Length: 177
Ligand SMILES: [Zn+2]
Ligand SMILES: [Zn+2]
Image 1: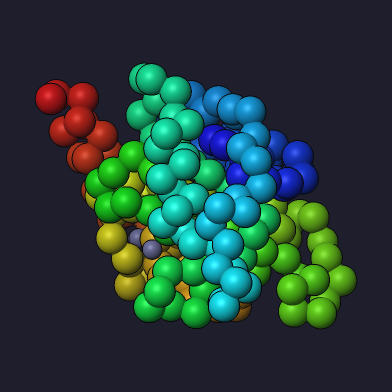
Image 2 (image 1 turned 90 degrees about the horizontal axis):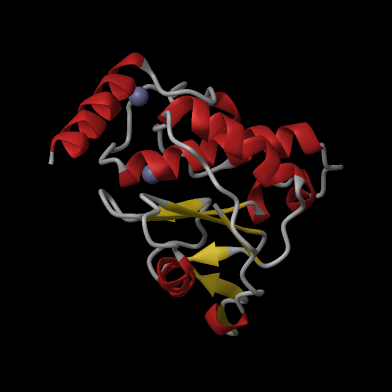
């Protein structure tokens, strides 16, 4: 797990133990990367998710199975107006932006525990993609697609039984290779 720019400790500190529990993997917090000025798109006033993910891959320590970046910057890809996160399907790198997971973004007073809960859900979701999981039709499952905050809040911070089964198959398959 790597912070990209400034993100308060409360976010990775809440996310790391939940990832360890759900994926059964050791999570290490690496030194934060600098603010992603290189990824800034002045026309959109947002940050390129793809450019940040390239830096994350470069920053990944040897032996790290997956790299999850967490940024406070608002990220985009060209075809979407914004993203809560992005991942390489079946790849190594995932990125979550907490910019639009904050109540303050919508003019509502912030609550740390809600931000933490949302960051956990989106981190599970994006890392789930790196283990080959696709979007789940169950709106309560962490793998269901969220395009607004209400959908994030509808989800539970766990995978449904079907996705959990797929995850276990995917991890067993990887161990056999
Ligand atoms: Zn997704
Ligand atoms: Zn599911």
